Amino acid sequence: MIDSHCHLDHEPLHQNLNAVIKRSKDVGITKLLTICTNLDSFENIKKIINLDPIIFGTFGIHPHETDKNIISKDNIIQNSKYSKKIIGIGETGLDFYYNNSDKKSQIKSFEEHIKASIEMKLPLIIHSRAAELETFDILNNFYDKNLKILMHCFTGSKKFAEKLMDFNAYFSASGIITFKNSIDLQETFKSIPLEYLLIETDSPYLAPEPKRGKKNEPSFIKFTADKLAKLKNISNKELINQTSQNFNRLFSN
Image 1 (cartoon, helix red, strand yellow):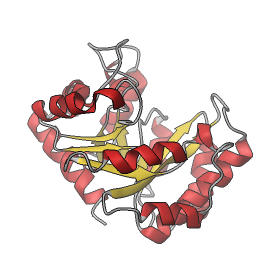
Image 2 (cartoon, one colour; image 1 turned 90 degrees about the vertical axis):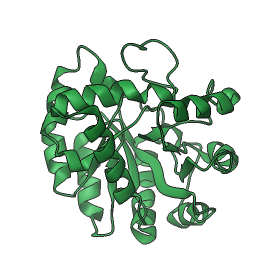
Image 3 (tube, helix red, strand yellow; image 1 turned 60 degrees about the horizontal axis):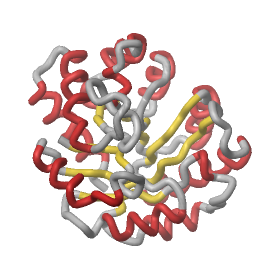
């Protein structure tokens, strides 16, 4: 199994990393991708990626952080070259649900990340909430054959997913698909081709059932994998093998 999106620099994971890594390996996780959210986050990720061979990282500014972390395409490229273990750009995108950062700064930052992703040929990890139209329009304006899109913790509409499929986007399922009230989202994941699906925890957030309400961690990904396998009407083994192949194909720069 591969956890395609976790935040190992966030607490309580960061202070318990050795135990978190061990429990991850105990359930069969072979790779952990720890995701950058701001400049301070990246300083921690630089250290974390060297703790164990299964850990990889990204560089990017979360849409909540764009007001305080102004960044250019060149800055993103420079930081992404820090190590061969930095394999993606993000998380970036738009979050108009909380508006923790100004919309204009979110859009500008998103555009800079897209340009860097195209130039570096590294996957772009996108957070999109309450901003489907804007996210699609920006991706459409900047679309390039070298742009590799990963919609992290996808909770968008089926229509949005269908439009993104025209860009050969990948979609990552989080613990949200295990929630009883996520019927529409479950139907959306049923409709997305298996070869474009990944799994993630987004830990320490969004713990899946039956761990909902607790602090999430990578080892809980098995519950999301089980649910997605049922939705796709395939064995757990086939789901794990295919999502791992998908991850390795997407991040094969």
